[in-house]
Length: 189
Image 1: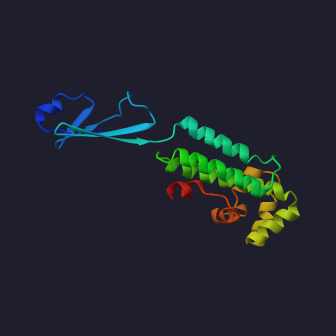
Image 2 (image 1 turned 180 degrees about the vertical axis):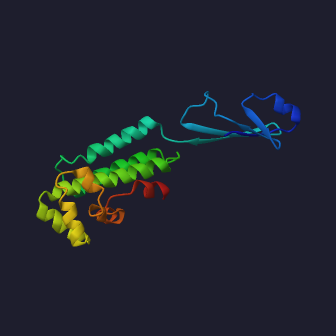
Image 3 (image 1 turned 135 degrees about the vertical axis):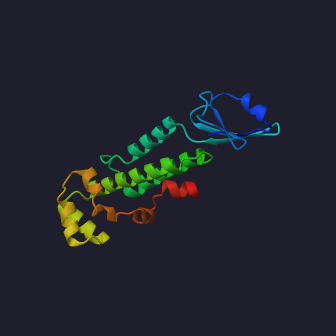
């Protein structure tokens, strides 16, 4: 929403019709199509002084490319050590966030971060392979016996088991101890 302060009442009638007058301030109903979608533009006009403030965010294509890179690095059929995988993920996360640091992308990073943790749980579940190893791993993480047995019963339904409470024991903190950077935490710090 654009905000304009009119110095006099006649000046308000000279503005486009998609502005509404309210207590000396004009509120624009929609952002003009002249502006690029990735820039929300707010301007304040007061006594012939115009201040432009741009709130930029990464373009959706850039966000999708970032998601594709993370998906490629967390591919469960790619046999690579977990330390090497985490190191490569950290390189991509740091590089992308440092490049787009000026932009507003908190909502995107919350969504991407949650999806990345789910994919990491899937990779870990795939690496455990057998029922005994999966049961042992969940018990070691502190899951109760009934929960571990229930999660092991999912077999190779990776996405379903990654959403269960048993595999949720591989939390953000657990992955951080292993060395994985949280996208949101890195962006906010």
